[in-house]
Each structure stands twice: as C-alpha cells, then as structure tokens.
Image (tube, rainbow, N blue to C red; front, side):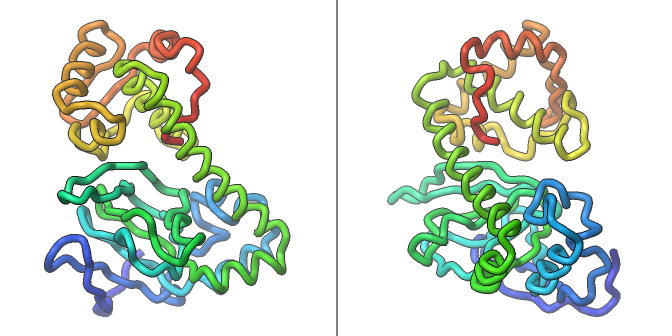
Length: 265
C-alpha cells in the first residue's frame, strides 16, 4: 500500500519528538473483509454484510513508530485498536519511573480494552517495532455490537481473552520456576506465530532480554543465563534476537503439568 500525499501527523506521547501517522481509512485498499488477519480479529466468523458494517466504523489507521506510544497509563479511553502490523508491549509505571511489562500483543490482537471499565487506560502500550493499528471508536463499536449479536460475541471473546491472559500471567508468576517461565514464553510465542501463518519453530524476538525479564518477573542476568543454558542443552538455537526451537517436545516436557498454560497468549 502506498500513498504519495503527505500524511497528517499527531504528536506521540511516549518519546519526545516522536510522531504517529494517521491514515484516513477511505484511502486504504485493504479492509476488514480482505485483511490477512481477518480470522484472528473482530471480524472472525462474521457474515460479509456485518464485516462491511464494521469497516464503516474504522475511522483511520495509525502508524506507530518503534518505541512510540499508542496510549499511556491514565489516558482517556475513546477507542480500541486492532493491530494490523507489528508488535506492542503493555506496561505500567512504578512511582520511581521504572517500567513493568505486563503483556505482549501482535497482529490480530485487540488492544486498549483495559479502558472500558472506568474510561481511562490502566496501562500504556508502546510499539516494539514500526507498527500499524486500525482505530475503532468504542462508542460506535459498542452500538454496533448491540445491534449485531455475532459481533458482540466476538467482542466479549476478545475481552475474555484479555482477562485470561492476566490470570495466566499470575499463574505463571506464582507457580513456575524461572526456567519454566522462559520456556512457556517461547512456546507461547511459537504458537502465536504459527496461528498467524509464520514459522512456529523459528522467529525473531521483538522484546529485549531486559523486557522479557520484566514480563516474566525475573532478573536480566537470570534470563540471559537461561537462554545460554537452553542453547547449551540443545533445546534452542539463539543468534541475537533470532530464536530457533530445536526440540519443542523436550521444552513441553520441562513444563510438566503446566504444559497447557496459556500464559501470554
């Protein structure tokens, strides 16, 4: 998709001087019905007519540069965002300014649902790479969901997935050893990439080791040591941020009774 005309800009609030391009939806050639992530997003299983109605409320598409913010903790809630391209981390800020990573979202995921309850975002979302999201004004989405039960069920499914993600993370942090946390993280990423049509055994980590440590409740040196250990045992191959799972069956055995955990899904 190309657009030769200058794109309007809005000021990004995560990085001083950062910007995010906003693309009017009417200028796009790809819509919900033809999107390659259709089956992972809100339109999954909807009739074409309903999908076109959903198209009508997608007002624009925002391009978010790496390290720029989609929204920050405390921001007023007005929309949810369907990730079309890229990856985001969600985070909360401690009083001393330290980041606590709370989640990882990729193409096909709906992000921003945390603001539905009290009208403000509880966490922030920052792009881990140059990304693109479809902006769905929530008031219009909610009205359409009430008129179209199938869309309402899909929205509830997305909210439920968000709740399960939080519960699974608490389970992971409370019951798994450090090595199991990292293994669960890698296997989960593999499954998510596979669901999106990519390789489920070889992928690039968008998070830094430090961000992975924050997400898993571990120290940076622990994560680095565990990557080296798993590679030394022949379970994975690591080169920079590129990871190849060499023995997924062995990794699953390491999780034992936790093998079916959906943490970080």
